[in-house]
Image (cartoon, rainbow, N blue to C red):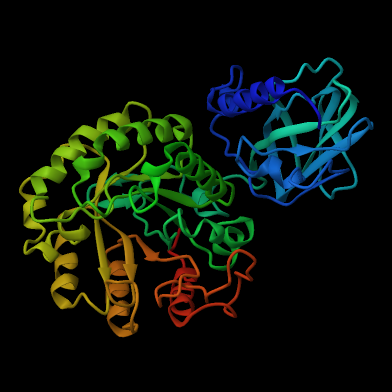
Length: 478
């Protein structure tokens, strides 16, 4: 669409700012997740290449859908994949907005019911509290507000799958998690075990995390949890904090829409001292906790793998004492996962063991300590440490592989199964590394699978992928 540079700049700034605001009048719906992001979408027309309808549900506030110019009516429709109860719709208009439009729902994409209508739209952000149900949601414009067409930076639909709680997805079954004693428990106090996958670094393999792959993870793999691994260095967060924070926001919403838990992984690795990134961590986790505090499915992993001779347990503990209150200021309920010494080995890889934590624990409630292992490298010393520690400390295995510590090499499925048997016995939740098509043996997909798939089934899985998918699919007794 043709317009002045000033109008374009104003529209982009408005779109970037608007999603960060907490809308007035929407408190009743704040707990309902965003269910439209990354879902299939269609439109009556497209103005030009780069302005396709999927740009309105991609979670990127600087991309948009635009219809053909000068034509009424026009529409955009999103398929939620299943019937949902819809509580809220948020429309972030570009300069080319609708003067008159309707928001509609449908069970089948052909019969439509209005849940909102207006003849006095003025653009900007329309944050609408609605009441309706359906698999499809459509914005149907009947009168343009400008001489151009219709254009949306974002179309966001909030709601819950029809059927209510107490079953269905992992989050429906378990609700808000908490640490009870030394175990992870659901909102009813039942001890549970989550099983799922970790992404690879989202600066490298973001193309493996799309609507189709996460549909497969939730529905075919039947995963309970997605770990979102955001590296800080190595081309990650420090190079573009806004880009990577928004990418994490988007992946949280995509996991939420599919009923999975989401671990926000502050993937500090090189350098290994978490204090090096403390200021960045405070900035990042403040925004994440503010944006997602109404959700029941978010967990915070605040230091991936602390490492180095100078990185003692007291250093890590001090870091946790400084960062945990930053999160708690905005999110009082989510479990927080604290990395341990020696690449999250409970100190074993640095010559220690779990007693350093038992004797000097983090002074905070609702926290767990992380343990990582790679079965072809980490023998009975590590296995026995995990067993002992789980009887004294709340442990979450936020990363493991069936191969060597490099994420490559031969798989040791026999030792891996020993670990999984122990974790099942002691209700230790686990996440496998990694959900990508990296060339290494630890990446579950064969090279070239991403972004197009197929992701369901086993046709594009490596040996480790077949093995771990089979074990994720045998869910805990929620």
